[in-house]
Image 1 (tube, helix red, strand yellow):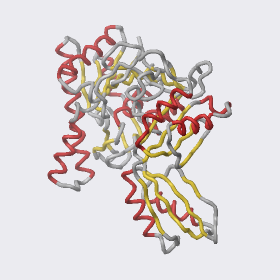
Image 2 (cartoon, one colour):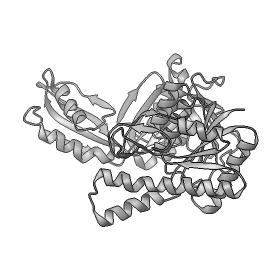
Image 3 (spheres, one colour):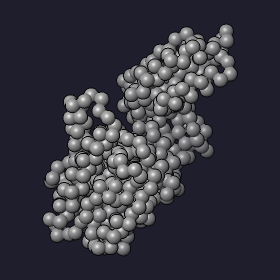
Image 4 (cartoon, one colour):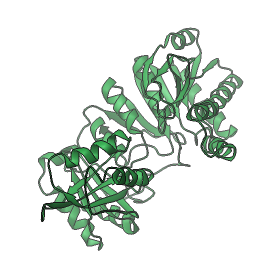
Length: 417
């Protein structure tokens, strides 16, 4: 008998018909003799609809009340899924995040899980129930309802798996595993049997939407066996674990792209000790994440530098920079949008020279110029104009020998959470 956590996203339970199909999938696990805990997201576009309604009432709704509102979506899903399981003759018990013992920090809209007390889950399992937990939510020690932000249901599932020491955490989504790149862009993308936590974490941070980075971080920290598989087929998925088997001759494991990129350039900055510390310290104190940073040479005691932020942070970043011009003198600050960050990831890159050169050559082969470059031991990222990103991804996929002879992609609508 195994203890299994199964997570289903919004598209998997987007209709009552799909809800019934998911219920049967869960019951199959139970009939195999496994003890099953299920984490589920809100149905389909429920969360988006709730956000739209909130904005109709108040275009700047309080964060606390938004959490109160948005958590209702998952509560609907868990109750309906429990009903579907009961209809098929099996016992199920549904719980909100706080009923399941999920405690979070006191931050609305993007809280982190601080503790889980799973006693109630174990009690329900001991009584023979399938346990269904609402993803994306928890409660503070003072009793405030919170949401976990983007990817919150994935994080809920992995955190529960760690807390109850599950044998495996299965993430069911619209694709049947982790691919070398988005199979909707590259039809001959290959499905990976295994991938390491570090590689998956890089891909998730760099734009691959299959798993959220926080969920992968939690899995790595707690050594949770994570499997990504399809809600629509019974195909074997991709195992995410500490040390994945390396395929012979494959240096790059995956290619990701992220269009949520804006480049800010600060020109004519006075070159003196502490200048960059003041500027990036101010950005950090305002909650703005900075990614790639490039500084040019110093001329006449002044330098130019550029950095990337998310599109949603672009205006805030410009405002912060304008606000500290008296402390950090500069000539002007400009920005550029319509960009994309394309990245290659692979644990084997560190011991194979020429990987970056191959990337630069492949990008230039489709007539695209590189604006910024960032590297680490297992990834290289290039910022380019967004117009030809699909051609660039296809060229990179071919250049690193990742193309397959056939298309293996089997999927459905894209999950939201």
